[in-house]
Length: 463
Image (cartoon, rainbow, N blue to C red; front, top):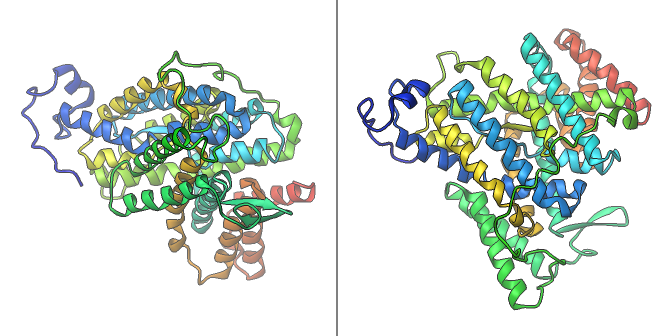
C-alpha cells in the first residue's frame, strides 16, 4: 500500500469549491492525494482500452478497432465522471471483461446476431437493470439466486476468457472439432513464444504486487513484438499486427455510437431473447455490490454492517453504464475492482473518479493505437483476468452436492459451449431438481423455480 500523506489544513491545497463539492476536508483527504489516486486507478485499468477492441473486433471486424477504442474510452470517461459526481466515491467504470467476450463469441459468433443486434441485447439488459434499481426489485432478484451459483457465474466467465485468450494467441486451436495444443498439437513460432513469455512476465508482476501489472505486461509484450516484426521480417505475425500506425493521435471515431438494434428478438425468438437478456443481467448483478464493498474496505467508507454510502446512486449509475456501453458499441460497462488501487493510494471521494474519467477522455484521441497490440499480448492478459476471477472457486461449498454440482456445471458449460446462457441454465435447472429430489424444496426461491422452468423450455426448443 502506498504511503499516505498527512492531510493538509482546510483550504490549503484545494479550492473551496472543490472542497464543497467533494467534502475533501470531511473525508480527511487533499486535492493532490485525490489526483494521484485517480491516476493510479487509471493506470491499473487502462489495459481495457486495448483488450476490449481486440475482443469485440472478432464481432465488429478488426477494421473497427479504432472506433472500438473510442467507444471504450468514451463510456469509461463519461460514466466514471458521473459516478464521482453522483455518488462521491472513488469508483471507476469501463466495459466489463467477460460480457465483451459473450457479445463477440456467443451473441455474434454462436447466435449469429449482427454486432448492432448484440449491442441491442446489452442496451436492453441495462435498461431492465435500471428499472429494477428504480423500483427496488434488484435486491429481490439478487437474493433469489443461491450464493454458490453467483460465484460459479463469475468463475465460468473467467474460464471463458482464458479459453478465448489461449485461442486468440494461437496457444490452442480447433482441430477436428477438438481443441489441440498450438497448430495440430505443436507449439512453434515467435508469436506463441511471446504469449508464453508475456503470461509469465505479467504473472510475475502480479505476484510482486506491481500496480498496473496488466498494462505493463501488455505494453512490454507489444514493444517486443514491434521490434521483432521490424527486425525479422514479420516474425510470424499476421498482416497489420504489431505495426506502428502512421499517426499516434487522431480525431475520435464515433461511428459506432448509437449503432445498436433491438432486432435480436426476431433473430433469437422471444423465449431465447428473454433468457439471453436475463442471463447477461445476472452476470452484471453480482459483480457490482461485491466490487463496491471491496473498494470500500480499502477506502474505509463502509459502516458496521458492511453498507456503503449512497447505494441508490451507485447502483443507478452502474445500471445506466450497462445501457450506455451498449449504446456506444463498447459492451456493458460496470464498476471495476481496480478502483481499489486508487483507494489504496489514498482516494476517498468522487474527485478520484473524476480524475480517472478525465484521463480516459484524453484517450479518445488514441484510436490509431488500437490495432498495434498483438493478440498474443492481449491473450495473456485474458488468461490472467480469468485466473483472477477463478479465486472465487475456494468459496464454493463443495461438500454439499446439491449446490456443488450445479455450480460445477455452471462453470464448465459456459466455456465448453461458448454460452453464458447455457451455463446459467444448466446450473439453475440442476440446482432446482436436486433440491426438490432431496426434500429441500424450501431452499428454492420462487423466482429461481420460475427461471428454471423458462430455461427448461429454452433447452427443449433447442437453445
